[in-house]
Picture: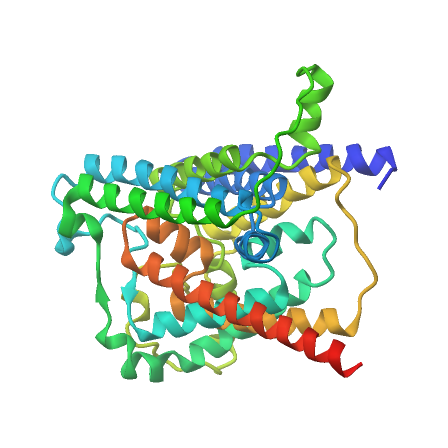
Length: 398
């Protein structure tokens, strides 16, 4: 995109709209302040995701297929920084880490076979649609033709998830257990275990990755600095650190990071109003995770967080010249809808996605985050293997 009016004028208008939204909400006092903060934190999160290509699926695929570890290193840094931030907050709020008194709102979710199945399905949905849900939101701003259909599919998937919730709850989720590392190891021990696990995974990724020759660096001029900030992909350590800081601030001032609560609430509200969903969803509202509710207010913290995420992604993608839509195909529609449906069903059943369960869960020291990571990774690996096998079969047949 080369039109200066669009490339620079439109981001300025979006930034003004974000500023106006923040000031308007903040002026409402104690009720509006969390909404204003959610908008700003969402904008910061969206800018970091888009500039660093912080996508769980894309980074995992790059590691497996290209042996490039930079993307997953950003994820591991985000996990480490957020875990340190969360533990600091926990220690100030709750000196004694007891299961009877979990940290307020932290995504310390239940562990069950249901979580494994949901995370596995979510991983397959990522592979089919090409992104996780958080990445689909920022890829809207890059002109992705798949992402709109993936989000529509996710809404349908949430609805199906509500329909299957009660049977799964009675069969498996009702027997789930909570495992919170600080309760068993103390805050220092829980944090040490998390950091050791993250370090081990990072070391494994670095060992697997392809060695890269050092690049000569030019002196950092003002022009070079602007290029690094607005045009090039941000370094993994910088991106991961920023994500971890944003996650900590979000939990401290508003709520744990998550991008699916608003989607789920829209689906739940529509299903309830149309009398499609069961009148009671067993145990759902008492579990930790990306909470879904029947919407009564137009604005919500999570809704404004997602709006800020998408808006800031528009700003950064336009400035970087990365808004590049292409011709839509039937395959794009099918990939988006099918993959999105699995993403939505998996996120609803797991009580969150890669941000709400994996990122926020591991930050909080919950075993549910690690289980989600393992099952999701298995779903991605099997999907990549199946896709590779299919391509090889087609080549041999032709």
